[in-house]
Every structure is written in structure tokens, then in C-alpha cells.
Length: 590
Image (cartoon, rainbow, N blue to C red; front, side):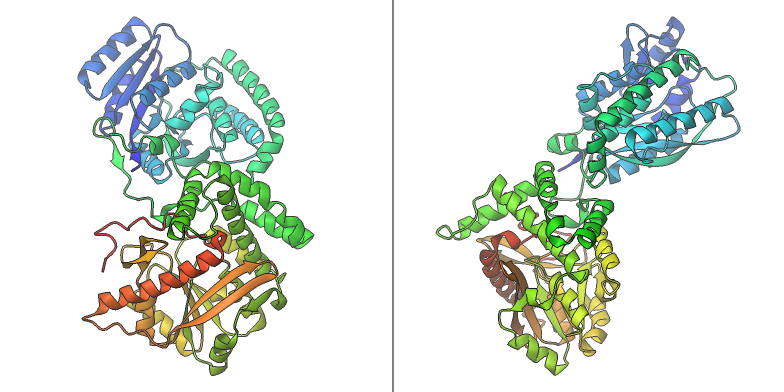
């Protein structure tokens, strides 16, 4: 279970008049505070000693023997916070310029995206010195050049939150500057390491009697020297930075929190993440919209065969960086082998995981090709078309239950092109929206036949009834548990183990009173093979025996899914983590 344990780090050098108010404004948020004294004078040391006594148990005072610079103090604070088992550190200057009331906003942003660096984006009032304001914009431009991005809106704001795993990994492996140029360089280098950044507007006020330790001459020299070094570093990394434009940034999970997730957080500031591993809808969709769009463009300009070559290095990248997906794939193949010990099944490992992920990438690529009109009817054949042809000829609507097996999208694209039948896909809300937007850009008909829902219940059934009555085929998947608490599951045996299956398809079929079919689309050497088979003329769920009937239908579906998984083991893509049981009390059980 993931742990989130934030703290506050304050570097200080001779700010004896401001530090008391700064600490008081921060202490009300209840977070542990690390104050790093960067070789301050005796008067400031006395004030800090008094504060350490006043906030005993909340404030930890660290002293550096000599003044080493703001960067040195921040790095000492970050290392101390990590050693104390905290996962995130909110850096804030000691001079009171920053609005401490915004601390909860930074914490909430980090909770929502634990792997991202949260930056303050200053909102200045009339107190800001104009020379400082204009000088900052020059630095911003250089940072945008050094990162080839506008992501880092303000690189000098002293109010920011670091994931400690990412920050300490960097400061322990690279010699960073120790003065005022530290704030700039650590952000650029974190960006080079694919950290994600989020910005929060925050008010900044310059007190008329405030003390600034910014040396106009030497700090500007240091910053200029740092920018020179970073520009050359950018040029050396240019191919990598361009490649990163089409790759996801490290924002989904804070790696340190995951590694230490079973440990107790210090103090009272740890929060348990309530999202368990099976919560597939909580997992960020990997891959950038730009990268997917570039593949779509390449497909149009250079054709499918050339563009498909790019899938191999892309999949290799995701294989190396996607530990959770690798392990889930291995778990699937392990179960597949244990359920049929004498069958010819792939062995769990890196090779099978690579082939698994490559099949997934090729499936997505084929979806794009289909919606772009680059797949024709000759590429897709029915194993036995009689059931489908009879249904279309009748003009009746039906519920079609598919799976994340092969390419369920293929038939919907071909149906839209050939007007064979009215096909509407029913999908869970907010999943794979980047990829769906790329498909929509490839064909204007895509969104017209896509219906998003949160779960399958009575309200959903009413929405679907009109479509079925109009002769539409509603296509849903039966191998994914609902994304929200209203959805219910029932257990069935699948590949030798108990797994949760959604009740929604059968509840929906009962409410609609229409025929139900199963559909699977598998990729074979000569194209795609469609398997369309009757499942039930009508599904009845008697009130007193509802649980037993739901279990029976789910088990029947699971048996057919297992059959086709054995037929095409690399083409089932719902392996993360299918066997994890939904939380009791959240999903209803039968």
C-alpha cells in the first residue's frame, strides 16, 4: 500500500526577523519542519534555538558549520528528510515572501500525482522590484531552451515540492551548484530525467524591510555559468530530449513511496493510498498524445509497414520502464501455464512480456489503421459468419459481449465504413482518452459510435434501450470490473484461479431483454479472424436466484474467454491485475 509522508524544508541564512512568523504560519498545517541553518550569525542561531524548543516534536533544526549557499542548505534538508523516511519535501524560503496558506494546495497536488515536481508560479503585487522581475524572465527563456519545453513556468521560485526519491537520486549522483543557481539547475536536470512538473499560482510579496542575500554581481555570474553548462548539456542530450517528447514523464508513481509502501510513516503525517493494485482506472494512461499523433501521421505519410517498425523500440522502452506491467504479464502467463501444464503456453519472462506488449502495441496500431481506412474487408474474415449475417438480416438490436482480447475495435471501424450494422461501443469513462482522441482525429465517425458510462446499472439500461430498439449492436467488454463503487462483481474460475467479473453485462442484458452474443477478434498471419457466437437468446435473472444465475453466466463467459486466451495467449490485454479481488464494502459481492 503506497505511503505519502510530506514534510517542509526551510533553508535559512541570517533571517532572524522573519523566520519566527514563517514557522508560525507553516506550523498550523501540522507537517514536520526541517530548518537548515546555513552558517547563520549568533543572533539568528539564538532565534532558531528558541523556535526548536517552542515547536519541539514538529521542528528539527539542522546546522551547517559554515555558510555554503542556499543550494547546499536545501540539499542537506532533502537528504535529512529522506533519511527520516519522508517521501516528499516542500521547500519554502525563510524570508516570508511566500503565502503559507497555499501549503495544502501543494500537498493536494502531490497526492494527486506523487511522482511530479510541484512548482510555485509567482503572482506578484506592486512590491516586486522591477529589476528582479525582468531578470527572472531572461532565466525562464534560457530554461525553456535547455529543456526544449515551456513546462517549467518559473524556475526560480523558492516555493516548490519535490518527490524525495527523484530529487535525492539526482543530488547524490550529480554535482549540483550550491548557491542561488541551485534552484534552476536541479529543475532542468530533473526534466532531463523525465520528471513531470505541475505549477500552482501562489502570491509572492516583497517586504520593504526584507533581507535578500542575492548578490547581484556574483549570483548573476553563477547563474550565467550554470546556463552555459546546461545549454551544452542540452545539445549533448538533444536526441534523447527529442525522443522524450513522445514518451511519458515520470509522474504516475513516486518510486520511493512504492518501495517503502509497507513501512509505517513517521509521526502522524502518513496517509494510506486507498487505491489498491487492481484499480486499473487509477493507473495513468502511458504514452503522450504527441507521440500517438506522430505515429498516426507517419502511418498516413509512409504507410503501415514502415510505421510499424517504430513499435519495436517504443515497446522496448515501455518494457524496461514498466515494471508493474512486466510483472502482471508474467503473472498471467504463469497462471496460463499452471492451468494447462501440458499445453504449449509461453514461459513467463522478459521475452514473453515483450511479445505481449508488442501485440498490444500492434493492436492499437491496427485500430488506428482501421479508422484511417487502411484496413479493408479482405483483411478481416469471419470464422463462421452465419450468426452475424442472420442477426443483421433480422434488423434486431443485440448486446454483444467482447473482451480485451485481440482487437475488438476492428469490427466497429469496418462496420462504420461499410454500413453493415449500427455498432456502438460502450466504454468506461475517462480511460484511454488520449488514444481515443487520436482515433477520433483519424475518422469523424469514431466519436458518434462511442458511449461512455461510469458503470452498468438501471440508469444505463434505460439509456441503452432506445439504441437496441433501433436495431443497434451494443458492444461491451465482460472482462473488466467496474470503475466506480456502484458496479458489482461476481467471482468465477478463470485460468485455474478465482477472479472478479463484472455483473453489469448480464444485468444490462436482463434489463434490455435482447439476444446476447459473444465476440472475439484475433490476429492471425493472414489478417484478423472474427468469432461471433450466440450466448443467450435472453438472460433472465429471477429475484430469488439472482446470485446463482449471475454466477452461472459469469462462469460461462469466463470459460469462453479462457478458450480464446489459449488460442491467442499474447492477445489478451487485461492482465493488470485481473485476479486482484475488489475491496469488500466498495464493490458489491454475490
